[in-house]
Each structure stands twice: as C-alpha cells, then as structure tokens.
Length: 113
Image 1 (tube, helix red, strand yellow):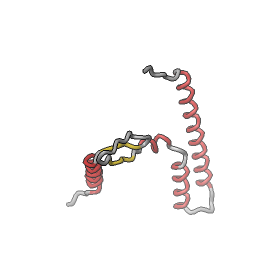
Image 2 (tube, helix red, strand yellow):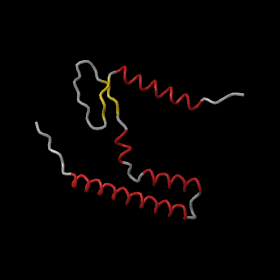
Image 3 (cartoon, one colour):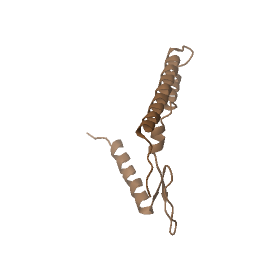
Image 4 (cartoon, rainbow, N blue to C red):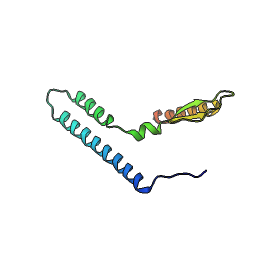
C-alpha cells in the first residue's frame, strides 16, 4: 500500500493555527491573572489560587496527550492501543509502579546530622 502524506504547506498551516490558538489562550490567561492580581476584594491566597487556575486552564493539549493510561492485557485479549492508551503486560505495569515509588521515595529522604 502507498502512504498518502499531507502537503508540507498544509501541515505548516495547521501548526501555525495551533500556535496562534495557544498564544491567544496564553494571552487571555495572562490578562485574567493580571485582573486577579489587581483586584482588592480577594485575599492573597485566593489570588494565587485563581491565577494558578487561569494558567492551568489555558489548554495544555500537549500535556494531556503525553499522559498515557496503561491497560493491562489479559490472556487472549488482542487489543491495539488506541489514543492515549498503551497496552502492557502485568509485569511491565508493576515495574513502572515500582520505579515511580522508588523515584518518589528518593526525593522525600533528608539527611540527618
């Protein structure tokens, strides 16, 4: 089978559109954050929360896509990985869990005198 690829110009246009959209969202989030920072009726902690929420909601589509859910393949289950889903075996998933636990444990330890 021959593969049909999109023309480079079309891809570039799509990327530019995406870039423009994300820039606009970032600008809106910054504007919102500025408005929150300048408001007087909110407490400092409320301001911080509102600003972090505005920045978080700006639409990080790349972050949400990079997080994959791991699905454990059971016996006789022939499943192709769909978007954002990776089929793994039991061993692989538990190994990853162990690695995460080890990485998390290392950060929390502190030196004693």
